[in-house]
Image 1 (cartoon, rainbow, N blue to C red):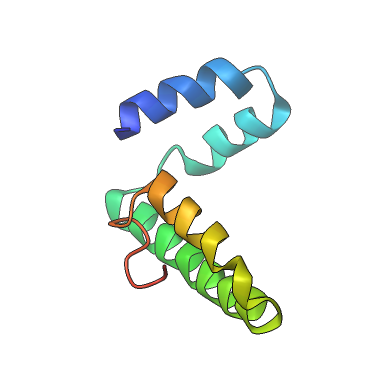
Image 2: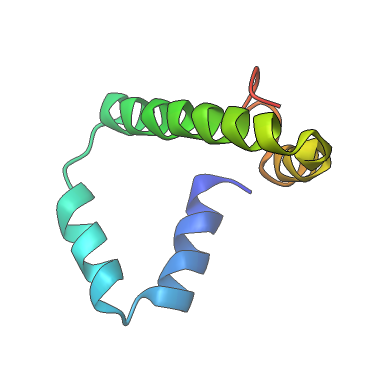
Length: 80
């Protein structure tokens, strides 16, 4: 899904919520570099969460494989 399709879907689902309006206001001036930095930070959190879950439940790898397939391995390469 390209960004424009995602934006349209998010707007149609949550556009009338306070949280959506707050997000729009906070991110309206983000540059491509700022979005990249933000996404990298989220991926770092994902890596830590994945590691902790796998440490306690090695069988949960299947869950992470499904998540990786649903968002695209290019997005989270090196994590799954």
